[in-house]
Image (cartoon, rainbow, N blue to C red; front, side, top):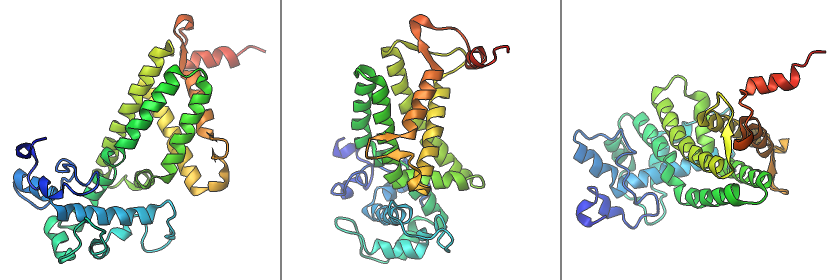
Length: 296
């Protein structure tokens, strides 16, 4: 991107760490500016990045891992993101983030009411660029193991364990799970979650398609790649919640690089997919009936 092509204000934050140095004008949707140019300039100002950094630290401390906030306190869910707390955290920003000035006044100048800041912070926190560099690298390694690895079952176990273990430790994942339980009455939060899952599942569906073609498999009659992705994603969400809420449950076995998610993933794969050259043509229901509905 040349200097002429840079979004307004973007040049002033080049020295910030990734992803705060990126163009976030498409992520922050609720800034107090009338014109598109004004909103884009404000979205990419160093001061706005400083408020995002302060809000992210508050989210990380509250949602963990390692968080010590009691669930039955007055700071339930998004309480730590009050205007006062964000302004205070702004003044604690480490270099190279801005930390001087009237934090409360600058925050209100950008987001009023304060709920608009919370929505934009959630947009930013769940933005894929927050963990995309590592995710891209890991996804490439996953494809290599699942497509070309000699031991497919072991590859599934290892990928499932790594994915589940990383999810437990990511504040963004913890936040999204907490929001899903509380999103029914908030259309904006539901929109954010829906967009995040659309992007997240889209990348996994591409991976599944690559594996299916390389391993010469096909989905059972009546099933789609959406069904496969949703089944595995829902199972993983459940495992992650269980591991966070009940660490002693054993759903993630770090010592042996295994997890219950690996077993469930293998079961879903075995049930949903068939060898292309030896497909039965049966739906999942028909296959189950053929095995279990035998006459006595």
